[in-house]
Image (tube, rainbow, N blue to C red; front, top):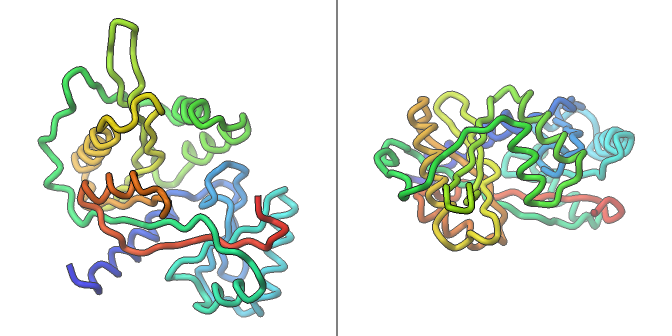
Length: 262
């Protein structure tokens, strides 16, 4: 795949990701998409500067800041290769706004080769609803009740339907949760979200088994390509996804004024 093809897949994956992470608390200010979800996911509580807008950047930032602070949220700007105006990252850096939480968006250009990989013996994929999934993730990650509620609300009301799954194994002690994750499919694209393995079961290949099972589910439903987002510092996850055939399409990071860093 050449650079132009990969860039186009990245552009499509960015749009699919924006659609799938849309919270109810969303509006636009001069072409800037602002999201005000109180949950943990910064993608659902940040500015995505999709268009340059007709106002000066300082005025746009001030208007956005008022909305974020009225909602009790820190001001967060997400910077991608698609950010407008293109010099916004440099302008924020010059203001002393630190960059943090860099992440990579990875794409898998085809899915037809994932079929036919069975789960290891004794493992079962269970579908769960948005609230049960959010509660389980909240318990695993130590999320607050508000964060759990926000995740369940956002994903149950998402314009792109989420499907949550637990990878479990039945033992003499009962069911063990080996890994969990979600898919959000829109047309040919499917996103993998919230892939998580509880600490006692890490390093045993369960996340790989789960991802293959999720991609098979999506492929059977009509998806032809996949994307996911992973923290740049998460070396084990990056190795896992690259081993599954994903490749980097682009990276992004966040910036906030120093007083809003949390």
